[in-house]
Length: 143
Image (tube, helix red, strand yellow):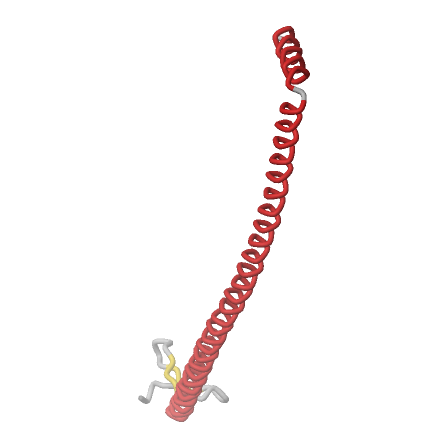
């Protein structure tokens, strides 16, 4: 290595062919720096892994909470639907009762009318025949 020249402040040597070599002192420093970088990268990976794990656990917890909220919400909806169904049934029964009452009233009025017509026919048979004939004649003219 007699042909090697050293440049001041370079920390290395130059061979007669022009290629340079790195000084052993710098190589050692570079290797320490690489080791530190690898160690730092390992720490970063570890922290990222822990953060990803924590985020995953947090998402799972949120998913469980949302699922429970939906279950609770569906129970509430079922309860409200049951209340609406019960109220609807009660209203339908009430409407049915009112309709039945009105039907009974209408049937009573119809019976009263038929009774009144029958009584009139028995009391005034000739007048009833005349009214029936006149009604038949008018209906025939309308057609």
